[in-house]
Structure formats: structure tokens, C-alpha cells
Amino acid sequence: MPGRSDADAMAKRLSGKGYAAYVEQQKGNNLFRVRVGTFKTRREAQQVADRLKKEEKFKPWVTR
Image (tube, one colour):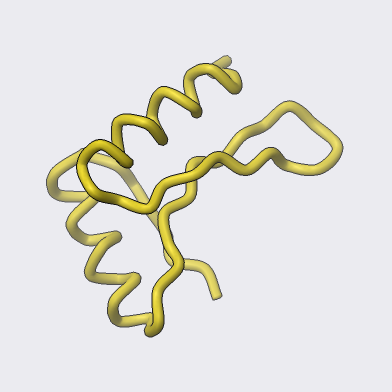
């Protein structure tokens, strides 16, 4: 199972490509999420998610 070092590496790679990426640990367990953002509008967030899906082959989702 991927751990913190994998999440840190992914966030660093995305940051190097200009994304505002950071790692967030799930409370109560050892799961880590790589998050990108913040955005002023949901539309802007969705555009970045679409670009991550196309360019990085991720399956991103937009929250809040």
C-alpha cells in the first residue's frame, strides 16, 4: 500500500508542474491524500481536475 513517501513524491511532482499540491493524512489511519487547490470557483476546480485526468491519467474528484 502506498504511504506518506509516495504521496509526498506525487505532490512534489505536481508542484513542479505548477499545481498547488499538498498531502493530507486521513484522521485515525495511515491513508494519505494528495490534494490540489484551492480554487475560487467550482468551475475552475473542475477544469484543473479535467486537466489532471487527461495529462496525468488520475481519477480526480472535486470537493466542496
